[in-house]
Amino acid sequence: MKNDILLIGQRRSVLSALADALAEDNLQATYTTAITTVHLDFNGSDYALVAFGRGVSSQQQATIRSAFTAQNPRIRFVEGIAPIIPLLKDQIRISLAQQPNQVPLLSKFDYTLTYALRVLVDVRHNCSVTLTIYHLNSFFKSSRQALLTRRLTAGKHILSVDRKQLGNFGTNFLVLTINDSELYVRTCNVPLTIMKNLLTKRHAVKTTLLRSVDADKAN
Image 1 (cartoon, rainbow, N blue to C red):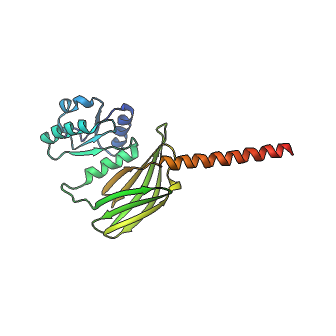
Image 2 (cartoon, rainbow, N blue to C red):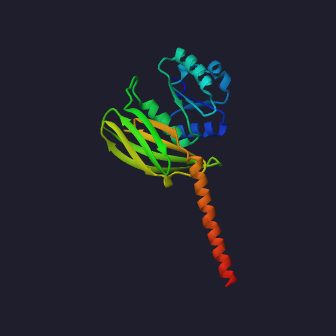
Image 3 (tube, rainbow, N blue to C red):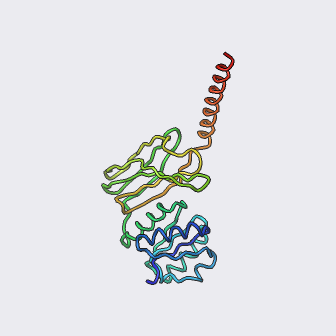
């Protein structure tokens, strides 16, 4: 294949940075922002994998998948949920390493978030799982925090995580990796009601401190 990977999205800066990051692992990538004509501009037989950015709608993805699969039945597709280079790179790396028709170890990945984060994982066989959180702030600056690594037996499990490990503002991405051969991403944001409570508590603490300072000045 002339090129291994085709990156499709709206943000040229993210696509360029991802292509550079993939090149560090000797993976050749081409990128384009011409989303509406990409299935006409490129041929699926030239690529092993296509990665979609968040700016590619589900309908646009369907059109591209249909055209490229007709040209190359073995082509793979990755949906980049988060514009975070290390995470996108891991998604692509793991997808390329998977065997054709590989049966997923994961059968369910979900979570509930109130004042604690409870992650539901259902796996088909014994495996090792790693749970990581990526936080993206309003300035598109990202941070990463490893939450846990655990050996699981086949079946359902609930993994509990302290909510304080999540970023309160911006966007959180919960990432589950299984045996370093499967990777799943879920958007995981703090509910608005909890954020309001946090802001109320912060305001109360700030008000108390200001009153204390004013009282000291008066004395």
